Length: 337
Ligand code: WQD
Image 1 (spheres, helix red, strand yellow):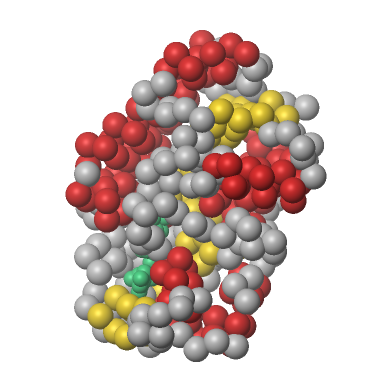
Image 2 (cartoon, protein in one colour):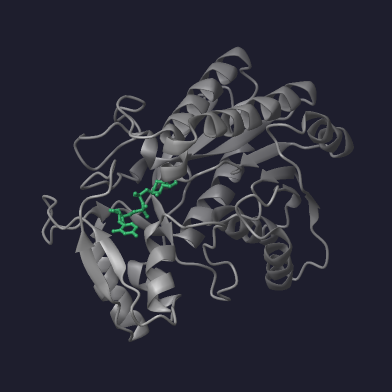
């Protein structure tokens, strides 16, 4: 059984992916510096759900702790890596671009140096729909334009890492890389112990909605950023996908990595989304129905950098990864009962 290193393992998508890997009896080594997640608590829940008394895990900063990272590769014969670890707040990246370039780029470069030194076979990179250039025809395919006119440094770090990986794969043809571009993950494991729970002020839709929906402060109101977009109800449309479907895509991608041969390109990109768009208001009305709760909300001006409509064509991932999203929006939102 291959040994998989998972960076960012206690994050929202990383933790759900660990459950998939444990399910497939993979030998997993975890790294997370806890900068955006609650390591101890998450590993405890994962261990309980997966029935694992012990999870091999390290806490280090991939962008600065090169010696410690090398020791992990020297200790464990790592075959593949799933690289989730990154700073991911769009707003914070605009205020702190250097922090984002140093962290997100250096962590990947340090990993690639270890892959080369220790002959790792391949990696899966956690990329994002934000690498797509704005104002393109929907649905976005893997061939849609990327990298140009991106609205924030976070998105640019994801695009730059994709380009670094393509160059690395060209120079190292036996190394295999799969890039997964996530659209909008929502929902959580039925235990409700792995909800998206970032440290600091959340930016994403669901953590903000849940803060108001489940908050004690009756006065608190959820802000919908813009209701004057060119969409049926005026609010933004996104491709929301259950996080467990995203996690399953990683298990399918690892399976593909171990079977990629010379005829395949050694760096392949896939959209991970449902292929359907849902508006903010549709999310809210569906959530209210699923939870039988009422959300206090009001419309605010548009948020800088937001696009009106973003959703993907996921046929390539379904065909080549033998992956298919199995949960609906209602399934994901019913998790929040
Ligand atoms: C979705 C919609 C907002 C919050 C995301 C992540 C980004 C990256 C790519 C991983 C938008 C609206 C939100 C709120 C709102 N993820 N909204 N009120 O913008 O598609 O980007 O995907 O790489 O980190 O942010 O997702 O969840 O921020 O917003 O009205 O309080 O919800 O305007 O239309 P987005 P989001």
